Amino acid sequence: MSTKNFTARHRSMLRAIAAGRGQIVVDGHANLTVDGLWCDFAATNDLVDNDLVRPAWPAPAGTVAPAVLTRGGVETLATLTA
Image (cartoon, one colour):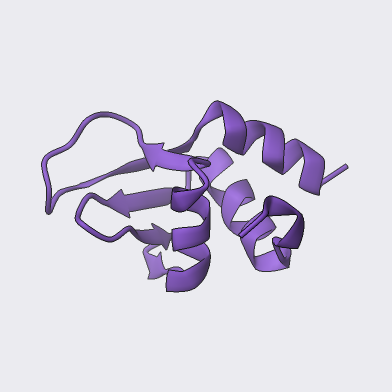
């Protein structure tokens, strides 16, 4: 998926992560929560697969870490909110 097809949901998730409100479950598939609530699985995969979101530090599989934006995530958020 190209980021030009991102929706308001993607933008909201990026904003929440930028604000420090997201956590990612490190596993074979990405799982993301914002404010303790599970995010849309497809949108989460879009963000992770496009290398826009990652754990704040290297974490072993099955653990939870704060989610942070990558440099690409910061740039994409700026583009989506311009």
